[in-house]
Length: 476
Image (cartoon, rainbow, N blue to C red; front, side, top):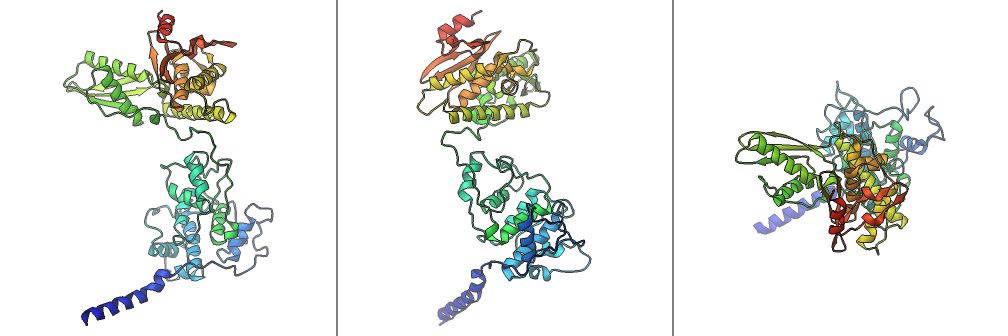
């Protein structure tokens, strides 16, 4: 009998809770007709359909002076008001009913909507202190992405956004380090945002206007206004988009006290593949001479990865044995990160352009691909005879940005392009020069793009040299 009573109670409990669990947001309906209520809203306005929709759904009455103010900024608090109204409209059919129970005295206009959204689990305290500030587009994305119950907005652009964003062809100003980046991507997937420009940029840090907010809100309530993205499909060639400099370095385990060439290479690769420019080592004890030897050894190894744009090193150490090496470039002037990023982006653009144009194809051998890049380097750069020791021509960036370089710039840029093809290569040097050593189709060859670039003609005798040919040429 006791088991039967418990079973009946459980069944009753499920019946009582089932309606709440099964409740779904209803499609909002327009409740009035717009007939020129906003004096500053022209039919030619890009936001005309969006603002009129907000009015007709009962989500706005505009400003006290009879305007809507499409170009005016929006505070975070005002964005919360609209988000609360939209949620309430979906769940109750009335944009104000949801916040009605949270009204009180001596509070900002946004306060009841904030309390309503918090009670609904939409928002926490993450925006505290910013309610009176102009809202950024990223903050608005965060508020709107969770404003409606999960599943209310179908992800009509899910595949398009996933592919375009992953290939770094679209929404390129949003990364995993951007505040609320998942919320931003959700708005694209749901057809709430399409961004601007050819790459659908979102401009997450910019403040949002009332017109832009109206566009997003109206798409949330009216399926007919949602955007079906017609982005160019991901290219059918192997794009290098999204590749980073650190990803070009084979990962290695940390070596605390490297001594041999192999150990130092492993320590340096550990640093570079981690995206770092500092390497801290630990030795039993150190003196000035030994510290300098370690520093010079590490710098020599770093230069074999000259596509990374490092060519100088500074050192701090304690006699107890801790030593920290900081790598940079003599020409950096505090801008090396920007130079490295620009070099990477330029190399990716060259790679993709050559593939897209058919200059490089899948059927080519590594030797054939390497020759195409060899030609491109020579056609797009001239030797910088006026370069000083601190010139930008010593790093790959300058070849791509300004079309001038010296040997380490030539070699760094060439190696960067080869590595984007997955071709194994490094840099080799003597006291006066540096050039490329690559493995093409299983055979090690030496390539000197600096000597190849002889002005109006390209000398291919320096392409794919045997080691003996190379040392005969470079043994000055």
